[in-house]
Length: 207
Image (cartoon, rainbow, N blue to C red; front, side, top):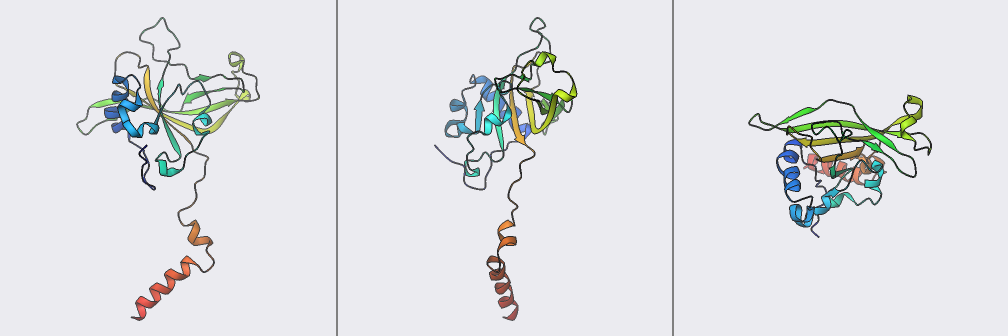
């Protein structure tokens, strides 16, 4: 398996997702191996609405694998009203044995436009709300005190089509996770690396 070099992260922008990755995955029936080859691990094929977001981070790989602090998922959406072929509302409730939750949009659809002004598709930003306790009777959970907003956020990309789009690419990340500060090593080094740099600068000035 090919590995992205350390320091490089797979993080395509909206235009790249909607012009390349999403159409390619749809055309290949979700076969990431046929679409991405040895880099197929970079996009997971799963129903992002069937499990809590932390599921996609349960087996964390190092950043050297190019996945960083986010995950990309090629996912299927299901309409709430099956009888309405043009319905635009997908099911976003997560129901499981350990309690569930739901994804709630925090923005409307935002157009993703290429350099020629063409609308390739749309982006919707969603937050994950978790039900309190293990009671998963979601039909009765309609009061704010019965769920809480989490730090999980999702960017959902869909193509610009007239009918309901069943296939999307989602980018999931936890905004509450803290990454190590870039200068942490230097700040915490008692006369080590920082002192070496200062000595080098001093010698250059003296010369």
